[in-house]
Image (cartoon, rainbow, N blue to C red; front, side, top):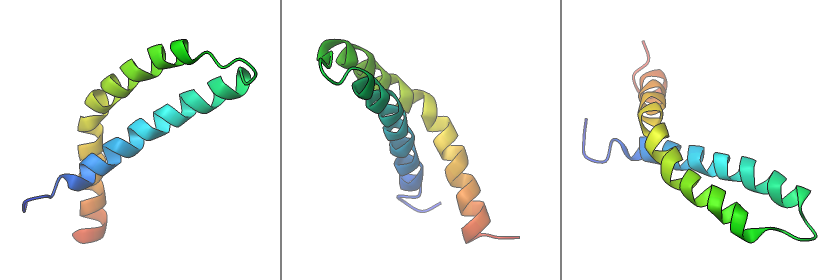
Length: 75
């Protein structure tokens, strides 16, 4: 693989982390809209945004390889 090949896996990893952020943040804020608890939201989301990319990176590489195989090197 050429230099920069895994940039697609990095983009997928960022998309996964962003999706988790949105799926946690939006309902939490929507359910507590008059008095949004900023401290607890940060206490949950900051560790999630550290752990999720680490856990999702192998999956993002697998997804990127599948995309590459399906679109760039079809059978």
